[in-house]
View (cartoon, rainbow, N blue to C red):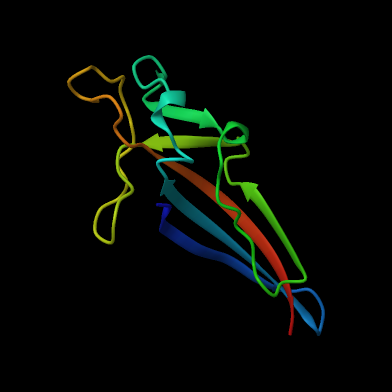
Length: 130
């Protein structure tokens, strides 16, 4: 039931820490849905769209953990510094970006029980032993 779409993966830096260690800094944009983990009942799309986007606090929702297997340390952070998740109508695919919710819904534009998708843009700093 869980679908995760990675629409962006950008390597920002590779830095030598010592002669035996290096750090990789990446940015990742993830969009996901699940009929159990991302239920539209908790997101008010009729009144919850502010300044052209619908967002929800990350702490209130399940979200995938982004980490590096094999790293001696791995630290994740929200790129914006604001732990909010964007609400989307679609997850996107190889040729189309996810479609964000940009204006309040009406009964016609958002039929009840429509599946929604959550998106986050996170940074990950990982240190490895060479």
